[in-house]
Image 1: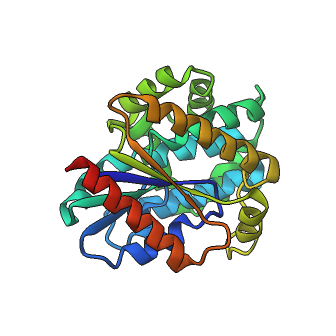
Image 2: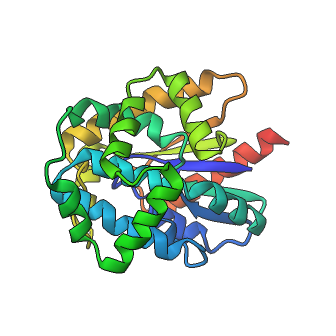
Image 3: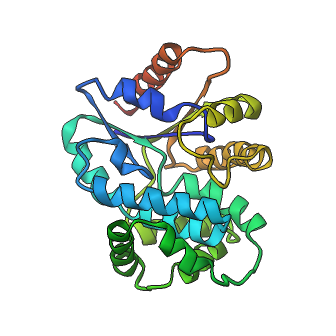
Amino acid sequence: MRVALVGIDGVGKTTVLRRIRERDDIAVVHAVRAHEDPRSPFADLSAALADASSAADELGRVQLKIAVLYLQLCLFGSAERQAARRGPTLLADRHPLVDPLVYLPVFASVAGDTEPGGDVEDWWHKQETGAAEAVRDWLRTASGTADPWELGTEVLRWGRLPLHELLGRLGRSFGVSLPDGIVLLDLPVEQALRRTHQRARDSELHETRAFLSATRQRYGTVLDRLAEVRTGPAVRRVDCAGRSVDEVTAHVLDALDAMARTRT
């Protein structure tokens, strides 16, 4: 059984998954930050991509941020297949078909049709030399272009497609299918923002009140639409407000058990 754990930044997905990773019957895979899994064969490349994403945040350029997101999600298919061997249940931190349905339309609405100027070169220079070379190689391999701005601009255009067309485009690009289930962790935006500001790493480009509010609303819309599909994933929502990590983890495990019972 394949399940995606989703929700806005700051809701606690990674923290919950660190607890669940200790179980033998659940394999955890990270769609965006593969290096969060110490056993990932893509850890070095994923770490380089995370640095490239941070460089895009520093420059405030959505096109570069989305290009990196695409490159990160291209790692998921292989990671999912490998992780599936470790247990009967595969739990993913985000998913390359679910989360872009939420994020791409929101990013597309704020990106604007601007020119890169010197920001692409600045972006490369902000990355450590060896990491930048790994990103360049993966950019060519995964997208067929050496221009991250071109890639980011194209993927942002997808965000203007109707939901069913965008879903088809994402499936063809990443070679994956929808999960069997989706668990949404929900938290009021103000609480999520406080959590993101407490992180050791710098704030990301999209970690603003307006953006998180838009994505929280969009998650509701997307999951409602997916739940209406006859062969679509089962959807469960977990309210995280006022709950400890242990309590949220217990609710996620209960949701997984309920989904497994339904499938049998």
